[in-house]
Amino acid sequence: MAFGGLDSGNHPQPMAEINTTPLVDVMLVLLVIFIITAPLLTHAIRLDLPVAQAPVAAQEPETVTLSIDARGALFWNDEPVAGIDALGERLQQAATRRPQPDLHLRADRDTRYQRIAEVMARAQQAGIAKLGFVTDPRDRERDTDR
Image (tube, rainbow, N blue to C red; front, side):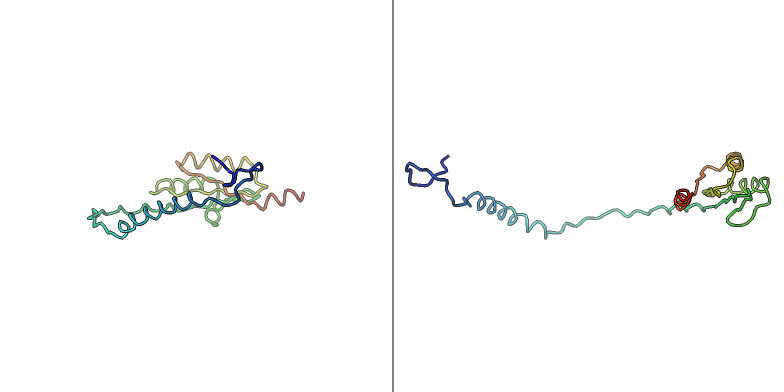
């Protein structure tokens, strides 16, 4: 394949013109493809789809927030709980509900771990299946200030 001009003198120079033939070939092929496929895109196909009844969506389980303050006092959805035994009764009632509520445990940063472990043990004994821990990301900022 020669890259020179028509004159084959002693100083062959590269051809400075762009060969547009391959570009025109590709464009013509694309034009033919679009001409053939365009009528197919406007043609509608009638479909008789089956009718289906979707089942009723499952209920979202309620969320119970169990909070423990720095002194170890318990709060069930921001209502004070008399003690660990009263908490056990509430957990038993919650475990029998269907769908079972999600239990979110929030503890003050100064709460003793022993109290948190007691609450977790009561929840397990009651049969609570889902227990989540709620944290406050702003506590990290306070930790760096100390």
